[in-house]
Structures are given as structure tokens and as C-alpha cells.
Length: 378
Image (cartoon, rainbow, N blue to C red; front, side, top):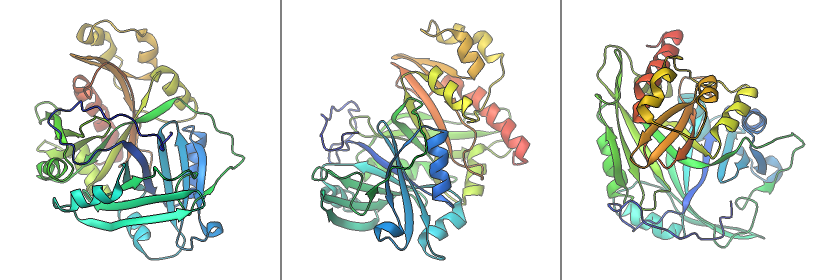
């Protein structure tokens, strides 16, 4: 990802304000119990390329971080090097999970000022970090749960990632699976908190609501949830916010909140331009996906209409299909990728569609309920 070139910022969400122009997702940082082993997993199973490293060898006495990249997606995997401290506290409470959603901006100082004066809680004030490759300005604010947004201004930096990181070139073989960029990131919040965080993104960050789903849209015989999708003006950052709704049994959001012990990032949707090839390769490497019943495919084309792909490979892989007025999309969801039933990934290919797969909700959530039942948490 050429983060030193500033792309044009077309405003495609008309209700969003422009006081906080965002260029894209800069990186996503996960706090992990064992970052080295997690890095091996994301390289060999998911096809990420090793980029940079911070640890004892770079003068970092407190933590170790491995930076991985696939096209425009950058993951930072971080573990503590000593007992105690905030990283340990986060892992003890939440397990492995997303700590930082970093946003690429032209001006990290202005981004911090604009958001804090609108009510955001500061994590740290604008901080300039430099090395021989230039300088980066970082600032940060709190969002739901223990998650933070870091604003990253890197237009004057030509290094491998950030000052304090060294290039990392291990001999582990890796090969891309065709993932291209972060399509959206979904946050789970507690009972009655969805509108609070919808208001936060509207008031503090200038986002607008793209779409909302209530418990009539997202429900099964047993469970329900509600969701609203917030987007910045150019549509590059989309944050659906979920909260539980009343149902006969415990919903997936309640299960997440119980095991994560609070609000947090539930899943990260990663875009590909060939979902059949991507999912085929991920399954070959051992990634497990949720499956809907085969009967789903008996009627799906009568619901979504003609598509470019043959139905049979989609059926074999378990890929779901949905259509809106703009086009259609193909999507599939992994099982949780950490020990607790919390974080997972979505793989998505958009063929014009701007929506999030409403037509698949019932089949998808019934598949999730089957997994919950196997865990004894439904």
C-alpha cells in the first residue's frame, strides 16, 4: 500500500461531514498471548507477508510486535514482554482481540483536535516519532470498550512501517490468498448501547448512517440482534455497530460480550476480487468457515437473480449470495479464529452491491446458533 500518495477523497456518503477526512484503514493491531505464533498462523494460513518487527532487538523492552501485510491490509500482532501492564490486562480480560483500529489521515494533530473538542476521550496527544526514514505523527482517541482509534499521518515517512520498527524478512514461505483491503469492521456493544456509539461516530467523527437493521431483520426462532452501519464521507471506513435484542435464547452478541467481557471488534470483513479462489485456498490451508444447509442453494438464484459465477462452486464452498439495487455480493464467514468465541473474519466480494447481505442473515445466524449449541452457549 503506497501510503505516501494521497488519493482523491470523493464524497459518496452525502450526509457525512468532512471535518475529519480519512484516507483509509492504516493498520489493525491485535493484542495476542503469543504474537510470534500468531504471526506464523497469519502468514502460512492467510497469506500475509512479513513486513516489520519491534522488540528487544530494536530497543523495545516492553512488548514485541510483528507487522504483516497483504495488499492494502496491514495487521500488527503485539504481545507483552513482562508481567503486568496494560497489554497483559487486555489479554487477561478479553483474550486475543483487536486493540487498535488505526486510521490513515493527512493531519493527525487536526484529527485529534477535531474529535476531542467534539467529546472524544484522548488516549494520547499528537506525538511526532522520527528516524532516518522521516517522521510520523500519531494521536489517539477511545471508542467502544477498550478499543482505540489511532490517527496516523505518514506523508513525511518512507520507512518500512513506523519509527522504532525494523524490516523483518523471515524464511517462512508465504503466498497471498488474494485479500485486498478492509471492507468494513463490525463492533459489538452491550444492551442499549448501539445508539450511543452511532451518535459518537456521527457527532465526534462526522460519520453518517448508511443503513439500519432491527430485530425483525436479524432474527431466528431463538435469537435476535440490532445493527446500524456508520460510514465516513468517502465510504472507505464503514463500522457496523451491533447490540443484542430480546430472544428466546442467548444471541451471538451476548455470547461475544460474555466471553470478551465487554464491547469490542467482532469481525473484520476482507475484500477479494475472486472469492472462489480465495476461499478455496483458505480452506485448503485449514481455515474453517460457517456452513449453511445445502437447501439454501436450491432457491437462492430465484431470490437474487442471475450472477456471473457458476452456482456449484459457491455451493461446494458455502459462499452466500445477496443482491441490492446496485448489484450483488458474495460473502462467507469464518468460525472464530481465537480460542474464545469472539473474533472472526468475513470474506466478501462485491459485484456492485453496497449492502451487507441482509438476505443471508437468517441462514447465517442459524448457522451461528448451531455453533453456539455445540459450545453450550446458546
